[in-house]
Image (cartoon, rainbow, N blue to C red; front, side, top):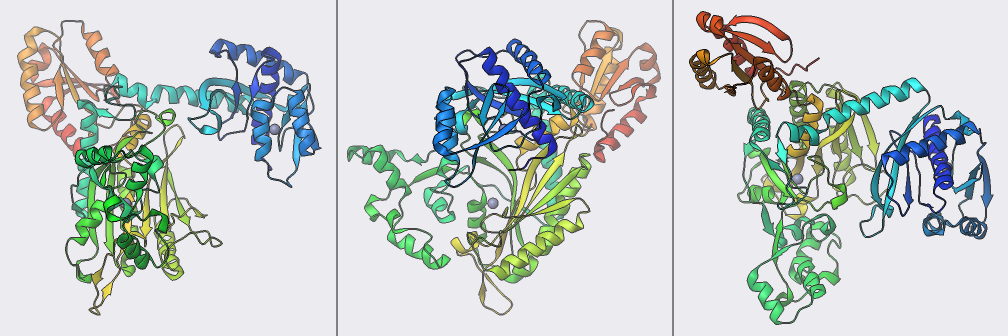
Length: 635
Ligand SMILES: [Zn+2]
Ligand SMILES: [Zn+2]
């Protein structure tokens, strides 16, 4: 395995970290320490829980190891010798498992620096002194091999760069990121909450957060209407049979909530003394008729014989929907279609539920329930290219409006050497060409990634860079030849024959939760005026102008502006400060002079003190700023 020079520095730093750890904590059991995109980590098993103070101590020891200028030397060994070395060093708990991961016939190597020796394929810097700039950052829990069933280890994160300057820059960016953390801002600005009684990973949108989401949804809906989409609504659950047809169940069971079994069926099988294991196989099972139908449609053994059970053994239930597609498909299939009706574009802000391991939940960006900005397009072969293009132009409009102009796209193509893909290769070629051509028209960087397609068709992913340079994967556009077959969809062509439509799935922003989480960090909470939960705050200097203030409040509200008035009795400075903390775009200070002149003293988040303006002209300017969805970022 070869690493870039930076990866070598980072990975070597993790060896140095392990060296220092063993000096301070001789009992520490080491797991692995790879480089990452932004640094390195080492997973360790240690009885005592490390604190940030401990990190400082470990860092100091690492500096000593670096100053000792130890060379990294490589040693190739046989498997038996490797076991021997690991045992001698008392590291068998995890390292033997890591050794077992190395396939037979592959070289086994250790790298040594000073007294420390680690099972490792390399590569490394030549001397520890080549590590010029590093820092330990944090400690987090991490399950051994990422599996919740395994022991939780301590993961020590650090980073390293070729120069001190780059390290300083990176640390500054991290501080920026901390200030922008959507979990912190979400709490401070009261945008959303997660409550343990409701459940982790389930977002409660508070009134302020709901305004942002609603504004975004309205904006996206307006664009969708212009593009000929039709709005639909579908329920949050569907019968298991539906997902057996789509293939989402039982194949993706691990990432879904457990099915809901009806009371009557549940009582019945309990009476029969059915075990949990039996219940599961009966839920997974299908009838012979269903199996035959599906296999005939797909032209291969899509459903294997072991899943078939007698009709009286079948157990049905409901599922919290993991995807909106099957519901939309049923709407499409509910009436006959002619080629003249196509494309049919069905859009829904559809809420779906996925089972994420609790360790992976993270604010709004990793959740268990989320609302996709979903749509499914049903079109003819010939329409695929234009429809993919339409999806991309929609994304472009929204991202541009939000000032997120730094993004790239990834086009996921099939791996030419693999046969895991469904559908015939001529269709694939056409769909891939369409995706590629569509990506080209965007005028932004795109990469083609063979082997990254979904098994049913090529896809396009969006990766957005925020103001501090972090990349966020948002949603996708996917071309699908598979579900139309599984659901036996058809339309009547110009030749009067029945044809199979092609489906396009697209959720360009992924989900409202994730997208809003990214937006909170992108704007650092300073939302553009059109998205701000509170757009204007009126601050009367004294009770004497209270009437004037409330009069303006009425006018602002009548003009559709979200405004409040701060009639607390504290000092003007405190009120202005509070408005700043709440990130209100405009604070209007009202005194006797302003009241007399029907004016307002404007303090804007973007420009600071703007002086006194006639209220009417301020209102006019504000209304137009909201209307054009100005997304100026605060400097
Ligand atoms: Zn190594
Ligand atoms: Zn879909």
